[in-house]
Length: 555
Figure 1 (cartoon, rainbow, N blue to C red):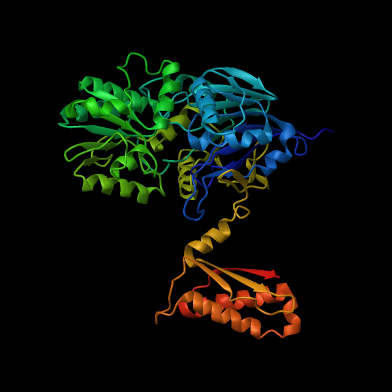
Figure 2 (cartoon, rainbow, N blue to C red):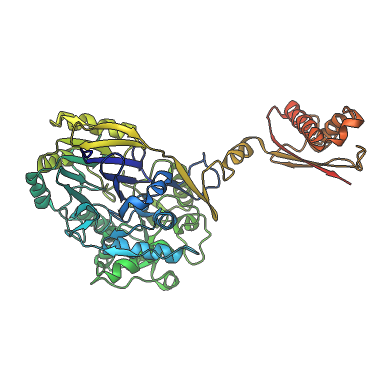
């Protein structure tokens, strides 16, 4: 008797964390599943990963199953959902499906990444339904802070899964299609077995305000402002870009775009008609010729990124742009947790210049793209799921979502984490197995396990510096010269003012003289003795255990 088909969900990123989303849906018996990949996102390194450029999900499990991958579907073009594709697709080479805007940004990202391989994308439309291997996939129009976000309705003869992606209920999203509540209700009537759903704002009551509310507030502020106004937002938020452009026009102001990523998104959105019927977007070379009271800047850098436009403006280092006392900067974006210090540095730099700062604490200049509890409850009523799996959130968000779902009458809620294989149906929804998961990092031109890239030693370097000792000996074990000592990030002297390199040199010489001459021919033995002595000499003076490398040369 053939083993029954199961529908399983396996997150490799984005569950138990916000960012780096990568989910797998498996269909078939346990030993013969076909996989559909949903999203391939990135996150950005914190201080625990010094020097790392990007953090990606570990896809070793997927690589072992690459011949069973039916396709890769990208729900929308935020970095935490599509940013890893350029790095990971060459390892999988599965067909990719995305809407026109997302496909355009994938192409632009490939073009902007030196040496990146072209990624062929099958372009689909919101509302379209197609077969990807054994997966019957419908792309359902949702609302989010980016054009063309999609939920995925995955149909099987055993039942239906609705994967929401990132979403909110916004009937006036500023551009593109609003969330298709009618279609969601029809799916509910057809029968949604499992709902895999965004948890980001599951602890917040009520409904998220609309993008149209932000547009009205931006128009009011720009009309009332007396001098220059700069607006910074996520470059991917095309509705917000359009709202700023319309507000600038309503206030009889010129709009200047500052920042490469913002310009890139504007080009893609413009090609698709999302920015039609707007005055021209001016480049930053026009800035110096515009009247102060007739200017609006649209800048990258809402997260305090060091090389983004706003950070350079705040530091007085931008080639073309300067703000002066009485100008205004609007932060039309939330600060992502972990970026508070960088954003604070930009805000303080602007404040020192006398620039007025406006955030969402002061006015409705930003709204979230994720659902609050009122929206979650509305979705439950529409689609009537039997099972809810919270995703896209830290443990706190997942727990809040799970408890709320149960309070709304959802009997089966599965709280899981990355690497958990969750059977959705048939049978009881529960974690049934686990798969390898973890992190892969992009470190310059190298991609791999974080510890292999040298991160472990970089962490030590940040706290205790490094010491290099070079010893030149003849073949009979005599020193040919004083040991060479190089210090990195270590105090130059002790508390008495004695040079640290001389302290180390003396300790090294003493260690070598303490080795019987017959045994000094063993370079490994000499190296370890020198390492121990050099490190101990620094520890005794400084109180910290530094990294130490020893080079022994024979002549």
